[in-house]
Image (cartoon, rainbow, N blue to C red; front, side, top):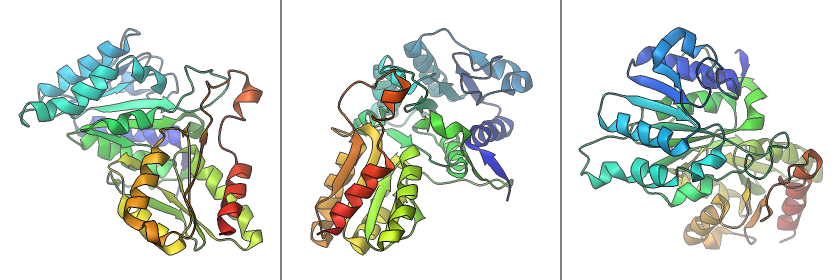
Length: 325
């Protein structure tokens, strides 16, 4: 099977869906001739003309325009914000309009919007361009949330998201754009709400998202030398959340560590922890552990920002602590 990076996988998904459905539109800041700040839309303007267009630097307007297009029933918008941090500027349009209007109008309209949101610490971008705000939107009924960790997942999830008639927030960790993985040339889809077991194990379950999936896998390989077999579960979507797969793993291992780059307080790990304890408390051999980023603004200094993101060493220490129970 061929190997491509996540940037190429996302571009292929966009191109294939643009070919498949002429109502599909791509727009945002610099997504046209420039090909996007992360080059995910490169070449699409030349191929599809005015179906790919640039917008002003006005995030609320970008999302409001997408909502207006979607409710006509004649467009399937794919807006992009240059940084997921700026979703806060358009919070009302995302949280209320995208998430709730379909239900507020009795299902008379659909909301087939896929909002692409680059997130994560990368290259000293600083406190307002490096955040991972996905947990904020887990509070929003009507919003699907996808967060792939591999090129394979990115392509399959994005194609599914674009075809979905509900609003999807598609979070892409910036470091993962260059990460390579196997992706088939034939078409495939990955359903929303289906987690993936990236590594099987019997002693500890690590639930991780995006870049932290790879950090968890590295830690798991190192822990083999200590006789510890770690299972790594990637939810792939936070809404819907595949608790069936998560609980199955938890009941097998009895020990749980949740790792994400979001702030630890109020992060997606807190919700996953709550649901595990509601459904599988007496299957646990140890208290659930969480590793998230500290509750401080992200440093712009490239050296300092490395201490903000969860590390392999933190994961190994947490797993060893769990094994002491």
